[in-house]
Image 1 (spheres, rainbow, N blue to C red):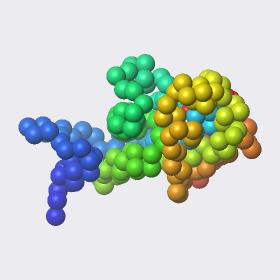
Image 2 (tube, rainbow, N blue to C red; image 1 turned 60 degrees about the vertical axis):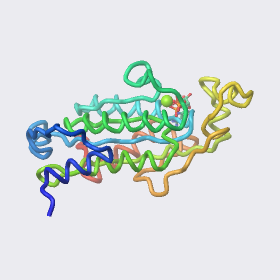
Image 3 (cartoon, rainbow, N blue to C red; image 1 turned 90 degrees about the horizontal axis):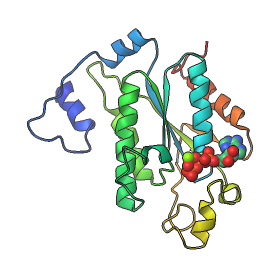
Image 4 (cartoon, rainbow, N blue to C red; image 1 turned 120 degrees about the vertical axis):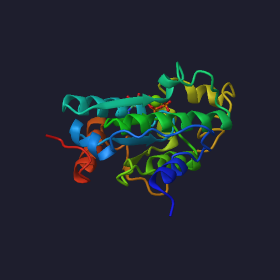
Length: 222
Ligand SMILES: Nc1ncnc2c1ncn2[C@@H]1O[C@H](COP(=O)(O)OP(=O)(O)OP(=O)(O)O)[C@@H](O)[C@H]1O
Ligand SMILES: [Mg+2]
């Protein structure tokens, strides 16, 4: 049977590990979570542009921070200012964008933080890769919880909101490969949570997510 170290190396890299590199273990996730008094996990919001991912992610991050929980948001636009400034919007670049974010979210979650990501992440395979990366276990056989939140809104509602004017540009042919218009959005088949921002307020969506997290024992709300 493969050792834990080998399994970790295999499962944390759908990517092949470079040769001459050795994984240096530290505290296990369980020990780190115990010391920090909080379980690390990743909350992955996916949905059309203007579905409300950034709005809900920001409100959720603030809510958790006010409760004294460590939370950090990785946002689609923000990471393109720095970490992913070299990437465009071709399918290949979108894949790489999501792969890097998955790894960064995993690092935050590994440090016992609630990582909240808000990316369109339109391809099921990319989201599955993110989930797979988080499923890699450590020495205590502990994976990192991965909570997929489908921000579900009809295209017509998102297009009518159009806070950045992107749908207008996409319809005019000024943006190519725009999700929902000229590029696909593959809906999650079985997300852990589905929020409907056209039916519920931001506060209600945040409450729905935090209740689910508390019910699962992932986050203490008091
Ligand atoms: N219940 C709700 N939840 C979230 N956003 C809402 C809600 N009701 C209305 N909105 C509005 O919808 C818009 C959502 O924009 P937001 O930037 O959050 O979308 P996004 O999914 O992050 O888009 P993008 O993928 O382009 O970054 C905002 O203008 C927000 O005020
Ligand atoms: Mg956004």
